[in-house]
Image 1 (spheres, helix red, strand yellow):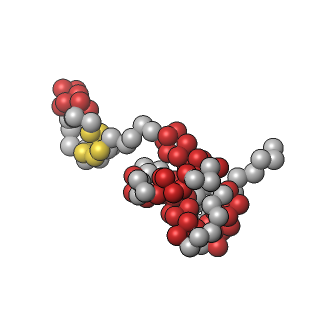
Image 2: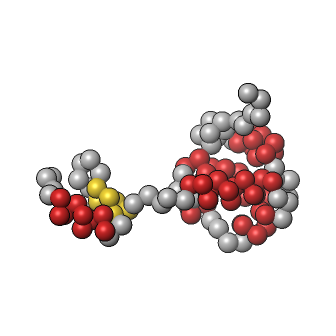
Image 3: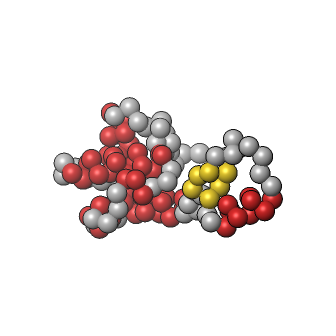
Length: 109
C-alpha cells in the first residue's frame, strides 16, 4: 500500500503510526523511564507495592519485561512475601522468566 506525505502527516497527527507494511497502529508510549521508576520504587520502598498495586495493573506497562517484573512483584505481594530486588529476581528465576525480564542485575562491573 503506497501512501503519500499528506496521508502520513494526518495519520501521525492522530497519534497513530504506520508499520512498514502500511498497517495502522497506536503510537508507543514515551514513558519507559517512568515505568522503570515505578518498578524501582516498588523494589526499594517498603510501602510502594501497597500504593502502586491499588492503582496500576500489569497491562499499563508498555515494555514486556516491565509487565513480567510487575507480575512477579504482585505475585510475591499477594502471598505476603517481601518485595525487593533479591526476592523478585529469585521469583523470576523459579518461574523461568528471568531472561525475559532482562536478566539478573549485578552491581559488579
